[in-house]
Amino acid sequence: MPEPTWQKSSYCAQGNSCVHIATAPTGTIHLTESGDPAHSILGATPHAFAALIHVLKENPAHV
Image (cartoon, rainbow, N blue to C red; front, side):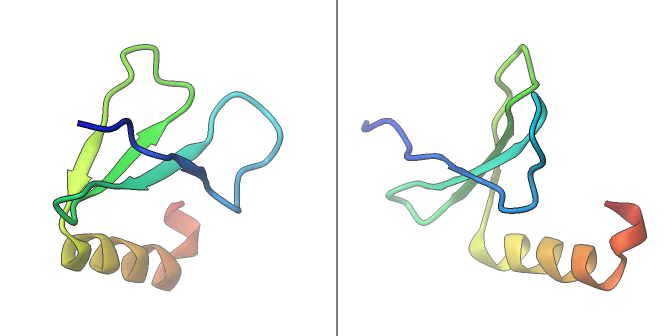
């Protein structure tokens, strides 16, 4: 299986801790955080990811 191509969030400031996103051939969206020493990857369906983005945009104080 090919390595994902990670894209850093455009909201990432300079520093160690940034959210990265990649898509898998299966259509799954992968999220990881660059400051995570365990390199944990969260997988989500496109629908679930869209819902997450919607909630974050509606509630920016929680970000």
